[in-house]
Figure 1 (tube, rainbow over the protein chains, first blue to last red):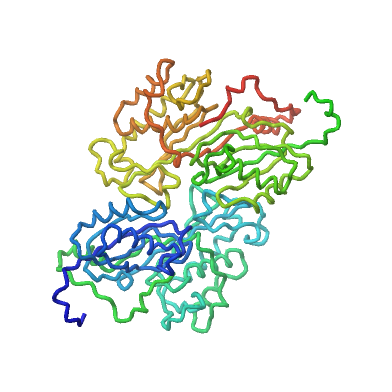
Figure 2: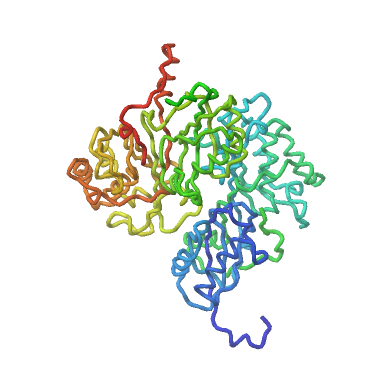
Length: 308
Length: 308
């Protein structure tokens, strides 16, 4: 930004995309080496085909290999004054069936969703049953006999019989609030601030499918594999390997990754919603008709870094 | 069966499988040329690997490319006295993620589910919305602006606003009963008896997803692409191209395929249930404790041939 050529730069525009993807056949969201199929690489390639002046994408979350998204947020900057709806339509035509743009809107040129996320909602889906289900296993963690609580039949097809749902719900509630989540992150995660605030961790059963449930996790920010370790730990309580109070013991500065439960597999995890400050701002503005303020990145990038 | 070697044959056993598959990456159920990936070929290959004496599969339905099944029924004959649960487990290990054995049970050696189907239930899922949805489009027919009824907004996300559901329900009810379905079959289908009886054709909306619905079709037997042509025709009524009474006009011996609506695409179609005579028989037997009679194929194979 201190370049002498600054004055010669063309005007720049920002576009914010809402991206949905089936993560099964992706090696995660973030671009890696050129031969790995990632969501970022696939969307950027389609974007370059339509608008070679478009920048790289700046996303809200770096979802892992196999993790799905209903609403990933990613922004880019362009020199072209193209209406966002045109990006929606042109990308729709160029993207493969497992990734789609659900919305496109204008934003400030260097907008970085990662530093503007107020909170995120993840869903984790679990199914029980003695056999595989090819129509649901792309989107559910399949638990069978060996994963059930003691005394449950190994051919059980009702989640309330296979798992202790009362204990699971009690354990889930203990995550709510501001805690030290250092035991709930991948050992490769080295960031210093491990305090996070969860506003909701809840269990939802499904009326149509008595063999399935959904764990909803809503929080301000997440560390690497944090939701999957939370789920893997909760499921240890549901199969009565530990009491619900185990969660409280793990939410302290002395606990380490090896104290918590296993990392649940990626296929059950969905990034369901990302609430951006600009959206909260726009909602408030619509109500108060106040003047809009520019979006700014917080000083400490670590605080809102996203790696669930 | 008139061979002189008949006495030398080893004893033979029947096994009946319930197979579920995601049809997206299959070229239909039925085995074709060796290089085409079909459900039958994939299951038979896994079966041969475990039991080389197993016969070819005899299935209840020949689902088309892209069509899914929650409960396809297929039987085979073997010379080995292996408990059915062992077939379940050994096939589970050998099959790819998009096909699974949900049940395995004993049956008479030459049992042919195709000639013993009492009725079948198909589900067809439809979704509306302005953009693709990578997490649901494998299993839904996606309708967008051009498919909506006149006056509906092209960015509509509520199925009750995009389609005329009252007209759709009225039209669906007109299919119920015994009718001539000759207008509702692929032009390549040449069988003479085109009379079929539908016991239920109904519309179900989804509580969780207001942008989707499900058409349930339950009938005694189906012809090639029959359900998909029924759905394509119903959707013409839902978008107000024809009144519901159009269905009654099409259910007569003078109507032809070109009078009906388009063939809806395969991705929304699920073979949800196949009720076999043996199952109905077993239910009755459990209640009455009557003696079991052998399962027999009906004389007219055409009557219960299955090609939805």
